[in-house]
Structures are given as C-alpha cells and as structure tokens.
Amino acid sequence: MTDTLQTLWATETFGLVLHHDATSTGYTVPELVEPGLRRNPRRAHLLVSTVLGKHLPTDPEVVLAAGRRLGQLVADVLGPIASDAVVLGFAETATGLGHCVADSLEAACYLHSTRRHVPGADVFAGFEEGHSHATSHLLQPTSPELFANTAPLVLVDDEISTGATALDAIRALHRQQPRDHYVVASLVDMRADEHRLLTVATADELDARIDHVSLAGGHTEIPDGLTSRVTALPDPALNPVASQRGEIRFVQLPWPGHVPDGGRHGVLNSDVAGFDAAIDAAVDAIVDVLDVARPAIVIGHEELMYLPLRLANALVSRGTPTRFQTTTRSPAYVLDVPGYPLRRGFTFTAPEYIDIDLEPESPRFLYNAQWAGTDTRPELILVIDGPADTERLRAPGGVLDVLSAAGEDVLVAVVPSTDPVALRHFREEAR
Image 1 (cartoon, rainbow, N blue to C red):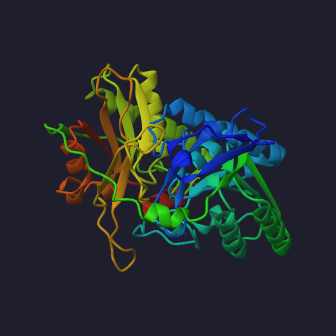
Image 2 (image 1 turned 45 degrees about the vertical axis):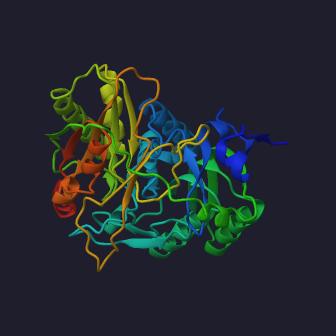
C-alpha cells in the first residue's frame, strides 16, 4: 500500500501524482520532491527537489545532510572498500550532490560530467540523456588515470525516473574501463518494474553488479495527455520588473590554482583539506563586504554547485541567515499559485561565450530566488567562475540585468576557474 503525496496544484489540475512506496532512511517521497511541469515534448513533468538546492532556495545544512545520508547508503553497499570508490555526479543537477556523497565516503576520486567545453581539457568519455533539455554529458578528468582502475564506480543523480541515463553512462564508461561493481545513488528512485528489469539485463550484459540506493522510492502517476495539456498552457510570466532597480556589487574571491573548484576535472581525496581551507578564505572575502545580519540567498552558477553550497553553509556558521540554490539550463513552467513550487522565474543570456560550433546558444534560467517569511528582503549572492565573468553577464538581458530589474540586490562573487592544464601539471609534479 502506498502513501500518496498531498494534493498540490499540478496534482489537482493535471492529475500528476507522486507516490511514496518505501524508505529505509526516514525520508519520504513527499518530503523530498514536489510535482512541477515543463513544456518539453519528451517529458512534461518535473520532480522539484526540496533538499537539492536547485529550483528552491534551501537551508544548506538540509542539502548537506541529504548528501551525507545518501553517502552512508552507498557505504553500506560497498563496505570496507567504500573509500576506494570513484564517484561520478551527473550534470548539472547532481554535481553538488555527488560531491557530498564523495565527501561522505572519503572517496578516492570525485568527478562530475559537464556540458561546458573547456579549453585544454581532454574528453575521456561521454553519454546522452534522452529526456533532458541539454543532453550531452562530457567527462573531462585531468588524466585518464583517475578512472584507470577497477574500483567500484558510484553514479549520483538527484532522481531516477527510468534509470536509462545511468545505464547509458555505465555502458559508456564500461567500454573505457570495465568494472565489476556499479552503484547508482539518488535522492528518489521512481523506476517502474520494467525499468528495474532493464538494470538486471544490463548487469548481465556487462557481467557486472549494478546496485541502486536512494533516500526514498516511489512511482510517478502520469495522466494521459499530460504533454499536450502542458504544451497548450499560456507562456509563463518571467522576469518580473520592480519599481526600483536593485544594486549590483562585485567581490573577487581568492582560490588557489592547485585546488579544484569542483569536480569538473576531478577532485582527489588529497584535495579535500585544501578545498576546506580555500572555502574559509573565500567566505572571509564575502563577509568583509556583506551586511552579515541581512538574510542572503547564495546562488550557484549551473554546474558550480558544491562550492557555493559550502559558502552558504559557512555564512550560516558566521551568523548570516542563508539559503542556497543555483541557476540552470532547463526551462520549467512558472506559475504563481499556491501549492506549486515554481512561483517566480527568470530567463537570461548565458554569461559564458558560446562556441556555436560545439554547442548551440540557449537561454539560462533561475527559479524563485526569494525567501518567504523573512522580514528583510535577502541579498542575492551570485557565485560564478571566471569563464562566466564576461560582458554578457552585465549586458541587457543578462542575469544581472534581469535580477536588478526585479529589484534584487546582487553581490557577484567571482571565483577563479580551475585550469585543467595547470591542475594536471601540478598533480604530475606532486607524484
């Protein structure tokens, strides 16, 4: 017998229902995700996480705790070899979650897939995501040796709907480096029985073990005609405009060149101490220019999730009420009605310069970016890396333009981006 999610707008209006089936952690599907919509012909529904910090501003400790708990589930499966694991987080949504899992395991290596083409970075492998708005995943470790081992591979995603993306990734990586054991870890697992059978078949095909762990499991009840009904909705009202523009400020964050700013080119267990120290120095620079008593929402830039998450958590420890979320490449349907998680939305030009021969120009998005129940309007702290610190960031139609037009005060915190060539050379010299 299943426990059905309380009635929310997408449930009441469209019959989109998320059911909770099982948990071994105390988490339930209704606590972890809410039903949202997107006008995508491949998949019209969206599971909006309450513990990820992507669409919803979230207490950073809640995000970290969910990641730690998921890591514990992985450790239970792997046993004494858990710290030998290589952890892979899926872009863009699970780049921070995967990092949390890797930290929990004290894993040998963490890497996340990326959709950014980085000069000087070799592409080790790639795979496709069928239902996503941006489908191509690239793997760009500093060297193939980060994967050239037979240790268990842990693949982390925020939610598993069919498991197809994870299985495609496993096949692609198995061709590069066969392994005996794969673990797919997610906040929620919504696979149907036929999808679970596909996992068994893939394991047999590869002669490998494939385990799944999640904080909670359930299934999605998708009504007939949902895609056509969502597509027929009127255009959402994006980019609200206030009577007075907000203030834009900038701060440059210190960050050592030999410390990876995230998992795009691989984070080794030996990098953790340096990363922690770099976070302390970076939050010092933010606090120097911040009204620490004013609430803040730290906003990461797409795949740059874990570093801003840690900054948000550090700000809380310094006494600043703080929430965390990120921008995204994925369009979702916005409607300001009670019981719907996507109440406000912004669309803007990608701040990075795009090589249209490698990827098409496409808009970027930010949802909500507001904190209900606070007496003082929060300052938005937008954390970006070097490639996003461009004229496009500041231009009309850019993220700073649309946020300030909505009356938001924005502190832009710029962190130097990791140079994969320099990081590779540092690691080679350190051997």
